[in-house]
Structure formats: C-alpha cells, structure tokens
Length: 166
Image (cartoon, rainbow, N blue to C red; front, side, top):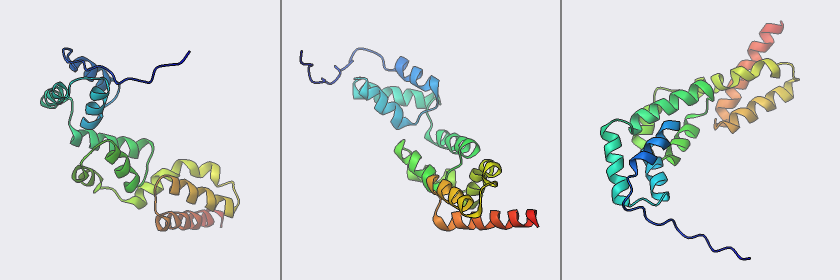
C-alpha cells in the first residue's frame, strides 16, 4: 500500500490562532518569528497570524528585546557560550541584529569562557597536562570561543594550578 505524498495543511481561515499561540508561549518564551512560523505551519491565514502577533505584542506576551535579554541571561547562567554563539542562536530565532548587539554588549568573551569552564575544572585537574589542555580547548571551541580566548584561559588556569601545587 503506497502512502500519499504529504499535502500542505489546509488553511484554517475561520479559526482563531490566538489559542494555539498562547499554548505555544506557555511552554517557554518565544520570539516573534518563532510564533509566526509556528502559526503559519499550522495552516492559519497569514493575515490572522499577523493580527494575532500584533495583539500579543500589545499585551506584552511577545517582545523580542525582553526575550533576547532573558535568553542571554539564561544561557550565561546555565550554559555559557561565546558572544558569537549566542548571537548565532538568536539570529536563528529571527531576532534583529541591533537587538542582539545591545543584549550582548555588556558581556566579555573571556569572562564567559572562564564561567563556562569553571564547573569542569575539578574533574579535569586530575588529568595530565596534555589531556587537560585538550579538554579545555575543545570544550571552549565547542562553545564558540575563538582560539586566542581559549588559549588565554588555558594558560591562566595552568598557571594558577601550578601555583597551587608549589
């Protein structure tokens, strides 16, 4: 039995996209573009989607500036990444580059790298020098930090570790 090719969802011209939008927002904050893509993928008429987005913006359920600040704050506290990596994630969510720049200007990649690597230090300090270096450099590279920042952090940690053993 052959399956039919997937057909696009029929337009939901008569239904109100507000309820699905609120349900989608209830799980976690979203950007305006995420809501737009969600509702259009569900088959809602673009005009209704845009009206719903305007209504949500008026009621302050949607605000890309607040979303961006909260997103950056959360990432930095729970899973620090480089400013480049954070900007990339936010760009994928449809956030304007001016909003991204404003949200990230207060942060320094060096501080973020140090914060990212701190929880990993205790288990990694038992490793020999080369493995320790490789772990730190790979970890920071994976989080989007430039090599010069990663090497600087490694050198600082290696010096402080050497002082602790002396």
